[in-house]
Amino acid sequence: MNTVLAIMGVATAVALLVIALGEKHEKLGRWKWHLAVFVEGVAVLLSIYASIATESDSPATKHNLESAHDSISRQLENLRGLILSGDSARARELAEQVLDKQLMRTALDTGLVQIGLGKYEIAITHLEYASRAAKDDSGRAIVMTVQSVAWGLLAEELIQRDLLDSAKVLYRQVLDYCDGVLELRRDDHETWNNRGNAQSRLGLYDSAKASYDSALYYKPDFREAWRNKALSLSYGGDLVAASASCDSAMKYSLTEDHFYLMTLLFQEWLHDSIAASTQ
Image 1: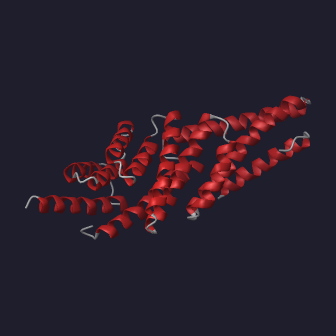
Image 2: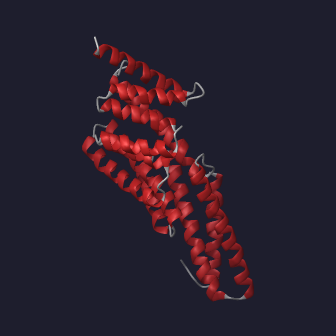
Image 3: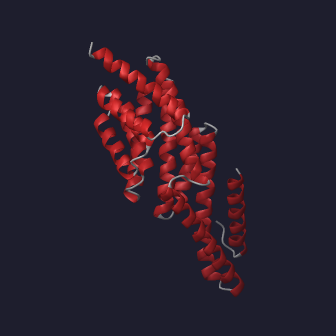
């Protein structure tokens, strides 16, 4: 929240500068298992993408945000120099560029807060504002990443309300956003994973497997992708391959956290199901 307030403060200051220049601007029970995975999935997605507004575990995302911050800082310093030197024409032009970036970050952070509050439709509205304000590929990629998450969470909410057809429409939107990100950042393992999740929900299990494989190509120890791949394979009926993928997820779970316990439960269900099918 402090980050949001700080960015809003900077955006306001820049806006005032512009105005001053004269410019305005299942074993468990299948349904219980799915619900548990959904709840955990929400937590995982939020932990990954809420970090976009602060510090990210993803080196690529963190690098992009740090670069954007450094760029804005340099531009603000240049803007100060132009104003003091009386070069109003160039100051106006640079002020518009800085304002666009600050407005994008403010809208993005507000969208993240709304996602955290579970207000996905409101979040989507703010993220659309952020998308319009994003002027470079790095900004567009970051915004589309969060948009894919917001639409995916809204789709999951519709599934819980048995609105399956409506949810499928939203999952196709998720795929569009994921494809947009991957055009700009082919090595974004988190987006490949999110893409696989949407494809799995649409019943496109072969395509989902390919997406998870891409995520794991770029990050072999990505345990969420291993576990999500196992889930998708189990939905498609390949329990043996699902069990192998689940074993890999367990291998990269070094601590007995919630992910580890949930994956262990799924692994036991897979083993029991395979054993029952061979009897």
